[in-house]
Length: 346
Image (tube, rainbow, N blue to C red; front, side, top):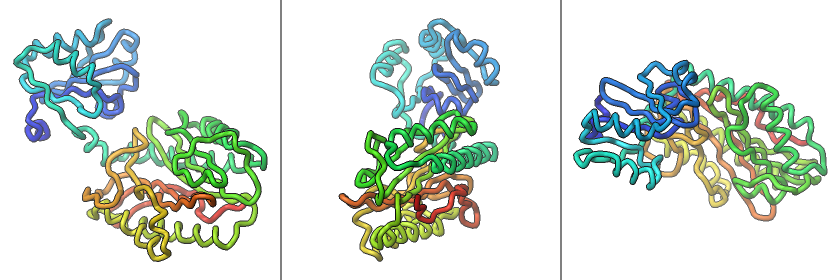
């Protein structure tokens, strides 16, 4: 493998379960994968004996002590330089690997070897993301019909999650965000006991997981008729989001998409209120490579699935964020999210 040569390793130990799923199709909760130039072996325990043989087509090692079985296999292979996923291995596990391996085997930290492959979605992955997006939007539409003044943020979040499952999702792709009034100025607010009240903003950030793949969408509603200032802020954020979407295309640096959103907000003197990146990749994880942020030089490529989500957050008033899931194409991008983006008044 060319990637092994570049990383100067003889084999790669994959411990991230999402990376293992991507490489093999295995969906269990306990496994390690040893990838060699001409052989791949998955190590797991007897709970997954039937499942692993149904899901994977590589070599399978099922043992009541899979860590020891892995150590034995590594010793037999006489691997001199074993790569490991530095961002997914705890120090205690690293120490155990080091203790169980011969002195001639060197552990080499690696970063992003599988994640870089995951960034370009296959046709099958794209379809799974499409389905997740559609389920998510349908759940949003159903939950909005249940909004009542006096219900709590937590009540609405539970309704959203219920609707996702009812429509076929495995569950939410992340903890659903529902934030009302001044709390909507917290970009990652946790739904609480605050009741929904008249004449305030309501921010909903939600994503459904379907066949293991995530979607992500943010919409802002207003409980009662919004005032002029709120309408102006919403229009500015929407213009910034549309500018960023227009910037997405194969071959453009990720930072250019972020710059398009910030430039539009700067025209309205709102860029200082935009406190996070413009977007991120998504797939088996809700946050994946690439990151669409200031100064990011990663080049967008056809097949990447990313979010576009600029926002502004003003203490005392609230926050406005508009987010879609899009696919990068050769001629630009395809917006997968079908939910309308005008400020919804309920």
